[in-house]
Length: 312
Length: 312
Image (cartoon, rainbow over all chains, first blue to last red; front, side, top):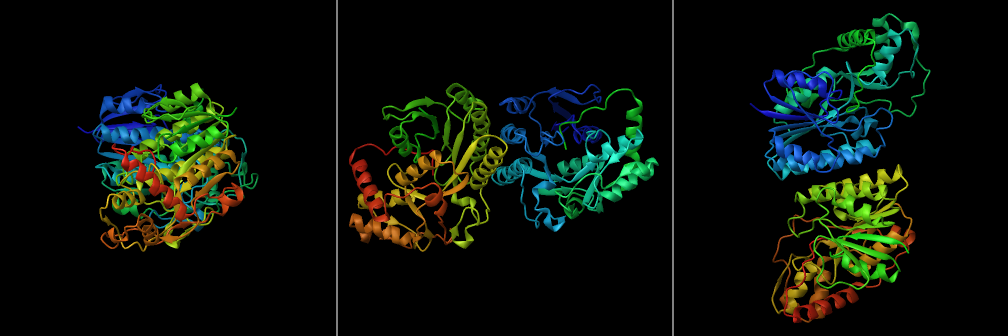
């Protein structure tokens, strides 16, 4: 049985990855700074602050996994772009990279961001679109991608880099776009939004999790976009949500300014489809319906939704 | 009195920086994995392996320097381009960056490389020439530059990045170009060289050291080329050496292949001259004369030359 270690296992993507890895028959080791209150049976949890120097190396030396899915990072909405934790996560990730190789690890997949791209052209193609990270977050992520790439080239490590675009779905942080609009409308409160002219690429988090598992199991090297490949305006997405909830009058398009956001960014998913062999399960309509249903159940229960601060 | 910490203090650039910092009145703390056998009076040495996780943080927390000149890196000739130590030095450098800020540090200067540039255009200008690192060494250096740049932007840290081109002078590693040719000719042995058509930018290491001290004392932010700004062919350099030693017949131009080397790379030193206010002391002829004289003395003494493995 292959042994896989997943970091950020309690985060937005991580928690959706766990059941898939179990179903595929792995011995699943999950690491998180804080253990979840609800533990999926079969997952072996390790409570560990990977930002503490030497802790990642110690954990890897003890577990000696075959595969490493490194999802952990700092991702508090709003502050993550320029937070110093980016550099600390880069440092900790490099420690894991070296320690994983030293402990006999074979395959490593880590998570990147569409913010690595120079998105002035709209569609982002892995080997073609130029890279131009302009924040500490994107720069640190991109530095890790480069280190992973060149490190693999000079060792036996096989590695890939899943560049995530815009995700939504269950367990999303409540202050992020889809979660906040769904929650507002379900509560009967107005949702103050921008005009929504930005073109984006939205993917359901369960599809993203499935893509990461497929990428981990493949032999594909280098950067692979994790996205739907379908450009839609934010307005289209928001109107879908409002329509499905049945409260279009609560959607306040144009109430917020989005002039500083990139006008158009979406992914080519040729590599993901052709080389990784992944296909999405949710189209936008079904993905939104499932997400609304999840939030409806979650809001009915009188407790605050779980904070998922490990992944954007 | 300002307190400065210098890493890689026992390396090629570092040992030339120390007397300059002392002369400028600093309290000079020098860190090295191995302490030098000959210690410059007045320098406070700290024996420390900065690659050991947590060691850089501990040292900075103890010393709390105002300024940090971070020269340490892996630089064993030949193997440094793809060595895993690049990623380990990147990790350790990020640890120092965060710890230096935490300990109240104000000004940090670190050393980069001309290999960060896309050198297809010949002359490299800091804010204009595109960056295209293609080795683990250059990538790791460039990642540190980016981290330093964005980190400074979101903290009070003032920082600069000295991009070094081709250095020569006393204490150079014996297997590097100028040192190996000088040593061969002084011993009366043939020096097997390429045709020497490559255009390069050579600077005497004492001038580079003076430039780093000037950069540390300035408020200049970002990347600054540390170079002569004068493009010359490798052949011109080698013929100068052979002529000064008086053994032109031992120079075997064309005996080695250099077809995989970049044909032309030299620096613009506008920023270094105008913003840092630095001027070089040695022209090529004087620099070579001084270097030959040093090697002559060094070879007369029956001991192997000191290994300077901390700097390229």
